[in-house]
Image 1 (tube, one colour):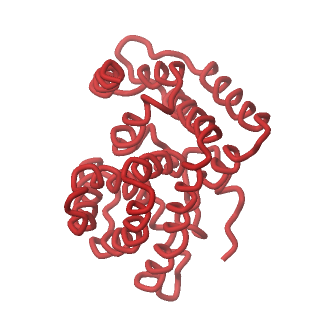
Image 2: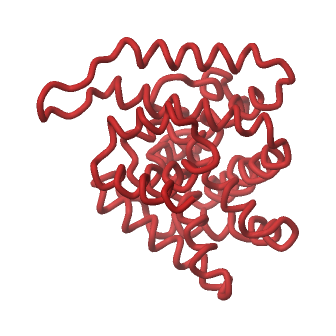
Length: 261
């Protein structure tokens, strides 16, 4: 099935692609930018991000930041991560491997089990942040259950379902989430044995940010990806922008983490 380039290069903060179910949203273009030996395209992305931020205004009084301002802040963080990747090509390869697992075997298994005669319609239902949920939960599970690897698929499935319910997002079938997790976990587990826990965690977190259509609306990505990546992948400008648009508790944890770095 041909995948539209417009989804891979998406700049908007919504994904409704029925070709990939969101599994190729944004990240393939992000890796292409990171691999490009010329910095021109990456600088263009940074200039666009800075301009978008400059066009927004701080909230007045106790009003919440506008959606445009929140989106511009997370776009700034994404640009930082792409720049960081351009200087760390080994991590690019890890992210490519993990992304290919989602866009290949996992989607294929979901098609067989749930696609029926209308696989494109079934894939469209996956565009509700399943992939970033899965990646963030895997990174968290690796850290908590590294000595009990066989428990990770069940843990990840539970975390995803609880997170979606807590955030009021659309409920996915337990069986669908479980199948996606089990199919992804096998090859990711093999990668851990050859590459190491820390590298796979980092790859999952960066991919979660790149694949998420709107990190500013997705608490799991904010807490499980942007927060731990802030120490090594984000510039001070982006951290300051995120502090202006994210809740006080997130800002407090960010500063505590940076003080301990």
